[in-house]
Amino acid sequence: MKYDFDQVIERRNSGSSKYDYARAAGKPLDLLPFWVADMDFRIPQPVIDAMVERTKHGIFGYGEPREDYLDPIIGWYKKYFGWEPRKEWMVFTPGIVFAVSMAIRTCTKPGEAVLIQRPVYYPFTNMILENDRKLVNNPLIYKDGRYTLDLEDFEKKIVEEDVKLFILCSPHNPVGRVWTPEELVAMGDICKKHGVLVVSDEIHEDFVFAGHKHHVFIDLKEDYKDFTITCTAPSKTFNVAGLQLSHIWIPNEDIRNKFKKVLYSTGYEEPSVYGTTAAYAAYSEGREWLEQLKEYLAGNVDFVRSYLEEHLPAVKLVEPEGTYLLWLDCSALPYDTAERQKRIEEQAKLWLDTGAMFGPEGEAFERVNIACPRATLEEGMKRFCDALR
Image (cartoon, rainbow, N blue to C red; front, side, top):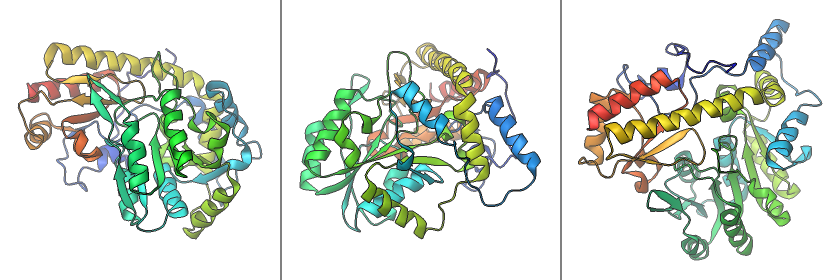
């Protein structure tokens, strides 16, 4: 490979949340982290080069993206997903969680219902509750090691709770599902039928494993454009979350204008100079790096699967279809959640995202970020298995 993903890079004392947040979180400082979803890999060299060149200019006033800024981004979606969004649909936000909060404020009123599908990315829950909305849960069905939708309950909850907004996680974090077109259309048609706005978080879209394909929800049917906000970002794909930049696509002009009004009320609508510099370079020249990275991550999945089968077969890997976050089924272990957590933290000296964070449905699970060098992953899995065996 051109890129060396085996290189272990010291990230402590670099201002990294993944490595340096332990003290503020009340965690021991010697934990090996596999929790938050960022990668322990250097970003593509063309992106580094572009940021270094921009730094040499030496002036960092208020930023304005270059005129052709969106060309490589739209080209990326057209080439790899068959979707061609229009430039006027796009709104900058500093992050997707921020955009979800803006969408909730734009399209619902305090006390109105917002639906999610647990176990799911926990900031969705936080944004619903912190904005004084009613949380409605349509739990995923877990059977024979795989997650599926409960469409009957999905529609029932929408009707009975008078749901106004649905937050779709696609690909799904943490269970790793890449939804099929049939599954997406089934949900989309129900939302259309009952006038439910969809906020589709597609941040993990570029991490899909062989045999699966990500489908852009809004592009499945023409009329989905009327009621969908699509959230994308370079942050997961290219490991640039710290640059605070997301691309939010809203074809419906009325919804887009209302979204912008709420966004402008925060005083935080301008993109950063480094964020746009990095994104332009990444979507223009970052594909080779991404393809090599995906190959490396597939090897990490194979490693975890084999290691668990050999050293701790009671823990089952929920086979991932997408994302670089593995969902481990620990239900066969002879420990309750508290004891399992104690062993992971105190004996294994690991920091994972415990499944309970994603909702009660996740209590028997652990989420592990495998976007790290193989040596780091091997050390983590050895500690995990030794502590829980």
